[in-house]
Length: 178
Image (cartoon, rainbow, N blue to C red; front, side, top):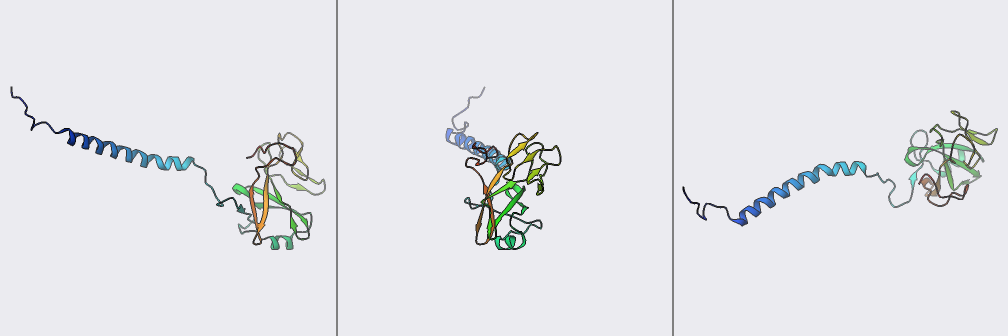
């Protein structure tokens, strides 16, 4: 039998280097593969620093306050594309004023779009008969909750919609949609 000499055995420094290189390569590949997965589960944040999202009309154009007020009479409730693309009612409350909140038109029962019934002065869901008052507060079920609301603001003549995080002024409770 031949006996191994120290020259035949790789040095510990070389072995540690190869282990480190292998570990680094495997870790890099694993992290590179997991990055897109993590990005998929991270919600997209639009609008930047909380300024809001531009309300869009039926053609996808930004809604200008002056244009909206010139084509919609006082008391009008018309749909725009609001947060997350949901249909949101903008309410004209005066000759030159839009309310400071918009009402999400998605029924809290099963998700139907709720039209405004001007004759009854309330929102009435065509799917299962839920009814909401003029502020979107539920007055008749089967809908369990009031319609979601969003802040509406005007900056540089553009109508912006942003998340409502304060207490719901209609019910006095925290917003369920936040």
